Amino acid sequence: MIKRIILFSGLVLSISKIDAQSAPKYSNDFLNIGVGARALAMGNSVVASDNDVTSGYWNPAGLMGVTGNIEVSLMHDEYFAGIAKDDYLAASYKFDKNSVFGLTVIRFGIDNIPYTIDLIDPTGNVNYNNITSFSDAQYAFLFSYARSFDGIKGLTVGANVKVIRSIVGDFASSWGFGLDAGAQYKYKDWLFGAVAKDITSTFNAWSYNLSQDLVNVFQETGNEIPQNGLEITLPSLRLGAARTFKAFHEKVTIMPELGADITFDGQRNTLISTNPVSVDPHLGIEVGYRAIVFLRLGIGNLQSTTDETGASYEAFNPDFGVGIKIKSFSLDYALTDNTAAGLYSNIFSVKFDINKKR
Image 1: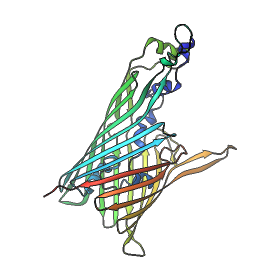
Image 2 (image 1 turned 180 degrees about the horizontal axis):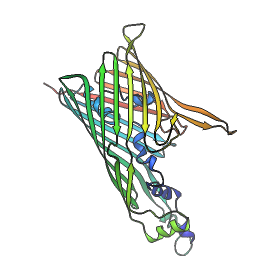
Image 3 (image 1 turned 60 degrees about the vertical axis):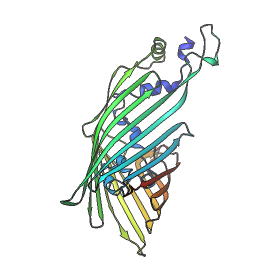
Image 4 (image 1 turned 45 degrees about the horizontal axis):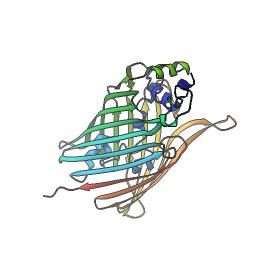
């Protein structure tokens, strides 16, 4: 009995979370954290203005803005004192002046989780040599394509094919597939962007491999035994509008962008919350000097919360960042709470262009 109950609680949480019926709002939620220090510093307000390799994540239509034949971006981030790790790699290739292909790979995982179900051996003795470990990891592979049209000035469109892989040790795994579609439109100094995420809904097919001892633990601790099935991510919509202004000096530019994430899966704790539509607005500002040095500010995660006395108030997360671009190399930094957990992270990302020799 004791042997079966001494089970690392993280395993229960990891496997229980994949029940779509219990929490459909947060299916594949690791894909909502964000990538690239520039975007994170601007409160994720980049759907209209993003125009580099990171657009494969934010808005595939923005891939038409890449300047090199090949562009690569990297980011590593950690949360909760390094317990959770978020890794991002993206590359794009420009076929011709009207088409770009992109590949984005994201991994969000917790590694080296102790598995203690066999901590107490059959004789009743504690044997630490029986402790093993496992990982709870989620992967996303985004295959992107963007295109512009000679006959429609300022308009670009793009799409993602998403393949999602989740692995919880040897106990559970899934494969998922989905589609995104995006567009950007430039009119004079104005930029507009829209992305329809999971337009056909994204389906994750889960399968489980649970030993009888593990099934007994679930029963004795009052947890529901997972069953093979589908987890569904419903469609959502991202909108953005930005404009570039010349400041007090011709070498200084200011670009604010207002964005909104619109979900259709029920009432959420957002600034505008109805059933079934919820709207989460956010704002970002980028100040640039000679297109070399950048200062960025953002506001996001506007929601109602309560203090220690139970009084409610409106809260938000401010973000801050800087960036530098020297020829084909960019280094960006962000101080942000992109998990909305009240814990700020220092995030760095790099990007570089590889121009094809002619």
